[in-house]
Image 1 (cartoon, rainbow, N blue to C red):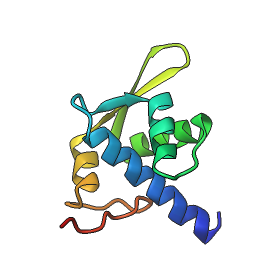
Image 2: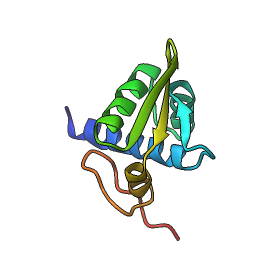
Image 3: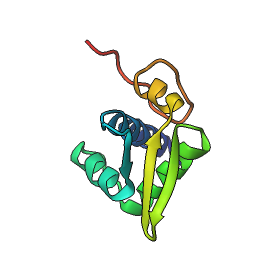
Image 4: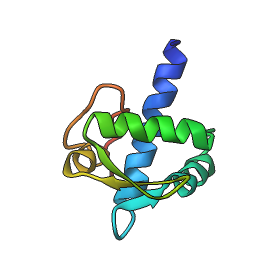
Length: 100
């Protein structure tokens, strides 16, 4: 994987965590997340989104549910919220900039 791809993937993963952190139930489905990430200027297909959320699950940043065939719902974990808010880091996820 190229350096640019690694950097880009880190930004997409951070965007996913921040989007989930902003939701009342800390969750969203893969289709909504793909659309929201694209609105932030980060190109991401639904298939790529599924790869990212499965990766985030593997590192403990989200949990996943499949309520119906073809739909995956990601829910932010405490660890994921800590990363989204800059309180901790996970290699492979861009560290957020300081707020202020």
